Length: 178
Image (cartoon, rainbow, N blue to C red; front, side, top):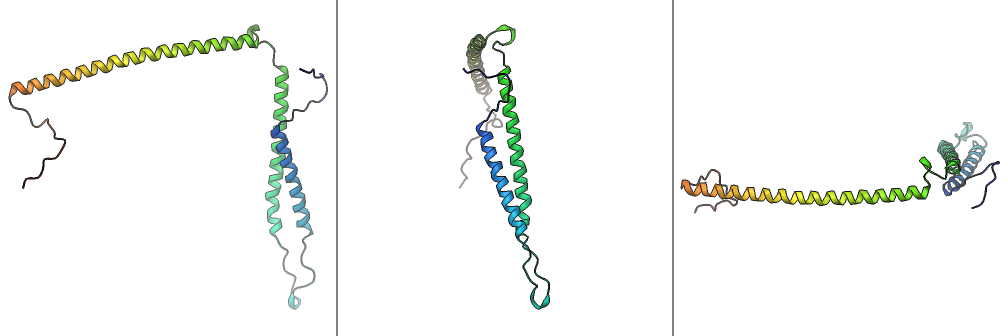
């Protein structure tokens, strides 16, 4: 890695900054062209027919000037903001310490984070297995409870001799009587 001198101005030029500078320069050129063509368009020479005043100048170019001016201002403002962001990022990158908090180097910190991630993944897997086991137990218990309730209900109906039709609902409608 090359050493940078401590003094002087260092520019951090990113692709975004180059793109915004191109857009800003194009907006400047468009504004200049529009202003010069708008200012040179004067009223038609001479007077109108029958001694009337000449017709008013064409205002279509004057209607576009605020739009192009807004584009000019926004593009240069965006370029300035990105330039400032790039400079701030450059300064932050230069001031980053080689060791992290507590005197731990970046490699050691990366290793500790990898170990922590693997431990968390193992814990999550263990919790998922325990949850699936418990869910299977609860589902089995619920099925057995429903089966027992159904058996007891059937035995009750068989011993009374009178099945209550009020609790039984047919899935299909009975066919109409002819």
